[in-house]
Length: 240
Length: 254
Ligand code: HEM
Image (cartoon, rainbow over all chains, first blue to last red; front, top):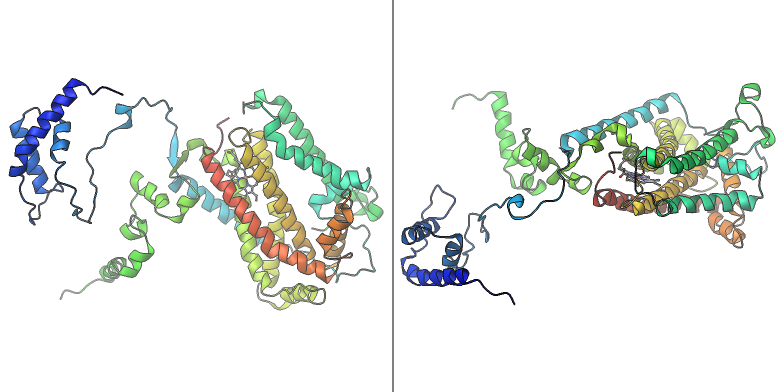
């Protein structure tokens, strides 16, 4: 149990005495409207308290207003009022380094707005000039040669030419996805500086290149029978 | 009564409108649509704080985070493309029936006799391909910035889920025109999934709604494409954006 220091006890005692005779002098709440935001009766009480004790402390003032419960009669029926604003630095040791920040409006929202407009404009203009493919009605009896998956799966289809379908279609992509999910838990290096992450960056680049190259080959270098071709010699066999 | 200029009259009307109950009920106290906007730090904060934007953005962000050269806006672009796809997709839904007998005809009619039909279908398709690309590039940029490291590990995991969902959305949409391209691309794709160890045949059966691609597959993929996958994607995007803020905003600077 913490001891209450003597000087505080004494101050509280003084406040109680003062409040005992202060009560009679508390003016009734008047309906009068005043310019100031602070209600008249509170102002008067403060003045009175100052007269009685020149070195009135904050504690004394708060204590002296205690017997009069907050009357919920502020301008908007408020039950609270602002007593004081205490700057955080004056009462606590602020360890956070100040960060250089900017307002989201306008700095970020304008960038986002422009980006949204740009991508919409791009999609619209591109769509005016380039039509989406619509081939003949689906026909189960006529397999196109070559048959290709959508471009983002062509890397997998490319693997099919090298491995057993179970390895190419399930094991390798499954493993890749699994490792991708685990990446943050495998890579324990806390730094995000490129010079500290040479291994991680190389590994990822090789991985991305691997898929990129496979997708390119599958898209552009595979012709009838999914045989290797050169697009400039035999043409494109690629639909989006 | 002195004659009012048009400007004054308009001013009066707008004042009246702004003090009406209806206006006050639409715009919350503090909204710039109530009290007008003049450029000041306080008003800049109010723009965000007293509007829906507060659900997406804090009032302030780190200075380097608004540099386009850091994020390349790739996550944002993925999100805009998703919105664009939703809008154009709803338009397409008015003209499309997911049965083997009607699907191709509906698309054909859409292109030839619906106003803006061809344009909107083109936009939907190109935006879909573009979104796969931006999501992929977004992932690459996040990796190269090391932005998946603590405390953002889990947001990366959510990101991988979003990548998968994006691919699935694109792939399910691929079948819907029911043309030769759709049928055979999906045949190749689902044959691959049929090689799942042990449960291969079951996986294929569930995906196709039968042993062969057919009208049941079309219905199944349609529901996945227009309802279930977007629904799930929106939920994960919400978590994704929320986590970006809770994990302390954008990572970096490098
Ligand atoms: C539908 C797909 C996605 C959408 C709409 C999306 C959206 C966003 C947005 C708007 C941001 C804010 C920063 C920025 O624009 O770069 C962000 C950050 C992030 N995203 Fe995504 N994202 C998606 C997919 C992914 C994927 C596939 C991954 C990773 C596998 C990922 C991982 C992250 C991470 C870790 C952050 C925090 C980055 C940082 O703090 O620098 N997201 N995402």
